[in-house]
Length: 324
Image 1 (cartoon, helix red, strand yellow):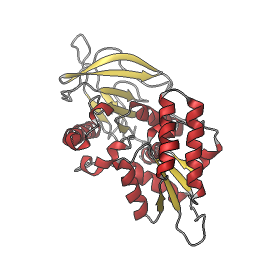
Image 2 (cartoon, helix red, strand yellow; image 1 turned 30 degrees about the vertical axis):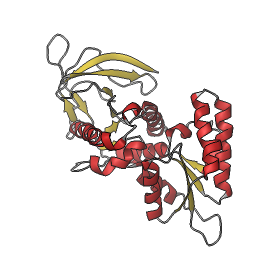
Image 3 (cartoon, helix red, strand yellow; image 1 turned 45 degrees about the vertical axis):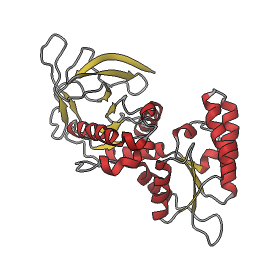
């Protein structure tokens, strides 16, 4: 659903710009090459959605700007970003970033209003092929993610999000000295769980939350710690369920066996529900997209990316845009 519009030279690299036709009918993307003052040694993808016209925004006090130059060398009016613009740092999985965008756009325009403006900054170096050894890659990843965060801050974003489970483990290091809110998915999950006012399934026990992931990643353990600190009891699927249901479900997705993947995931969910779990949190993007939207089991599940999108909309809509 993405249409390539232009390539933006940015410092020493080129930012391919893609415009998703379905995102917003009023999005403005320049159709000529643009130069940008941010320096970067690696090519990145930049997607800009701006509900305001390319040029001066009358009366805007807090809009960020990126100066641009047209392909013939003449200076154009700068991009100006409204003060409710959301900054999005793309994660290891491009699919996860696009999943977040879909939820974010749906939630921000569900009443027929305008989509909240956003900027997506995605770096190809932060892909799954470079993530096999987190210890050796940590310094590089954190440095690159900080650069993206600073870039989005300079663009005038009101808040920043990173829709990627694996990268959440470095959240605290990335947000050092940040000047605007940088949302964490675990905080968003906790907020949704508390808003649901859950009651223990079994008398005398705490509210139990099941964590369902395709592996035992660091990010999953981070979610566990956050939930336990908030008073929730965390339940994992047993080894047999992981080996015979969860992992085969992910493998079935990769083989494009949709029905097989759905049946296996349903088994894994039922196993957790039998353990008196109130709600199940998908801590892996591979799992959150398997079941169809109308599957009744999803009423017992939380997609952290959707929780993140919901809180992002709350943050952006709380910004006073009267001066835009």
